[in-house]
Image (tube, rainbow, N blue to C red; front, side, top):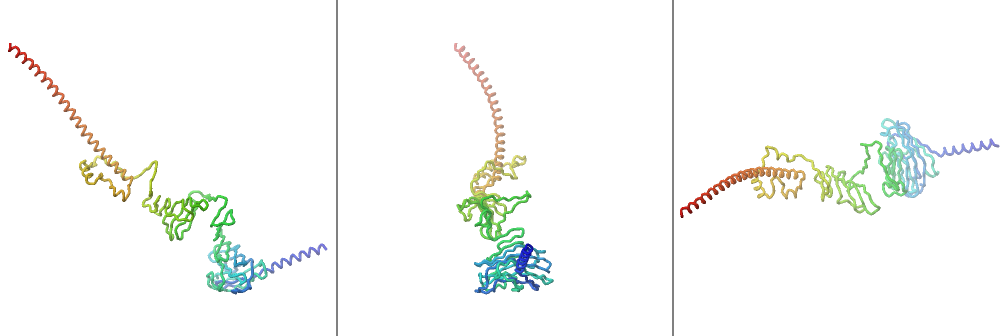
Length: 436
């Protein structure tokens, strides 16, 4: 009895295995021309029909003779609510330039109107292509049914051969390992060593409302290679006003932002700004950076390497330039006469070589050039002062000589005065004697 029970279990297990193997369907074909081939259907594709139903199965496409050795494994679904989808689990091939299976699509309209799974096969140039399709794990007997590689259209277009009223949801097999597509008709996501999705990605949240939403944690970019390697945050500008990164506090507005203003792929300027309402456009950014290297603060059109429309407060400013005014003290320098300077000032109301008020108002004040001109005038004034000091010293020496001469003359006068006084005294004495 014990042996009989064991034999019964083995028999039942063998029956179950056979049953599972019998549930798989296989169809193969020799492809003689490129085109869209239908490999499975779910009812007839009839607008307004009722032969379709829910369907889900696993498919494996194999390429036998093209030399590319391609194998594509995918899941095909037909749901209630017009939501057909394809999910590529694996796509392997020898050469990425010429795999025979290039695109998959699911053609459907409504839940009960029928659906089809089709593959675009690119025939090799030198030989026919033997292919096979294995379908298994069909969830219900009325789901997908394998068909013998029916050529639908030789046109490689995504909607080629699609019946009127039906829509194709297409996924490209070029350069992908895994991928997913829904009834939107657009490739939603794929994996080829890189991850792509046309939807939103949430980290720490099940309901991301932006392309990338990170909840409750920091984001770290680490480059182990170090300098000069780095990370490039690339916002592809195709057109429109601007692309930017902004820092906000809830929905109250942009506290700080940086970005680029561009149109039709041409950069107008990069900018830094903030303190504006969320979603608004920066008409007056704080700082702009032009493609020619000019930087502006308070202006979007800087005409020099650094332009500020406003007051600048600095502890120290250094201006480096050539052409300083030391040449004024060279022996051969021709110092203008004061008479010519006086005539120039009377005529033009400014010093020679100094820009006028109108020129400064129109072109601005070049600090370096102005400092050099002012230094030139100071050095010329120094030469005038030195020359005047020489003249004064000469006059002082002359005055000293004159004072010495005057002193000598005064001494002579004093001596003469004493002689005259003595003579007058003698005359008075004689006059007195004569009167007696």
